[in-house]
Image 1 (cartoon, rainbow over the protein chains, first blue to last red):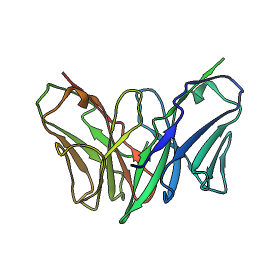
Image 2 (image 1 turned 135 degrees about the vertical axis):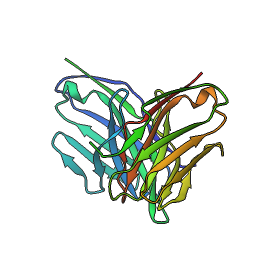
Image 3 (image 1 turned 90 degrees about the vertical axis):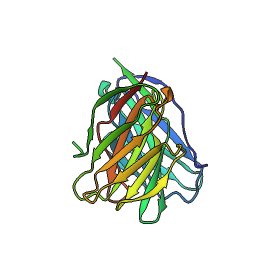
Length: 112
Length: 110
């Protein structure tokens, strides 16, 4: 069974803090990796893709370590609006498409 | 917005009933995936349709079934509803690797 594991948290941090989340996956043949953000009672929304070379988008940096089979998300200078659940997603290729497996999510609470 | 729509937004059913949920994919996307998300959990993969064929299935019983139509919209059918089927049901459309989610249907089974 393919597993994607995340620390559920919650991570409770003050504004301006730097926070990092990790996610481990069990299938070494997994093809592609993503971080999604999910606000309370809303659908998940794509935050960023994750590459071995690293991927930065403003205050957010994502990294993939294939050897150790984990992906990470770093948020710098946390804002109140960053409070949400962060889901890591691992894609496995089958036929002509990709089958994703989601982690259970890591909850982030940014307080004033 | 992703352009993925789902209907209905909310639904209340009783045990033993049947339900059909609908999803319209983003224009140009040929793949639709369905997920069940219970409170406090990540989305659990139910199945995926690629060009009208089931392309993969998660650990859900046969009473969860689906369809994809030539315009790539999709339906999720659940028969013999159980209390544990109460959840947010999400569909996501994709063309390649990235999934774009609809707003979900909240199902309550009493």
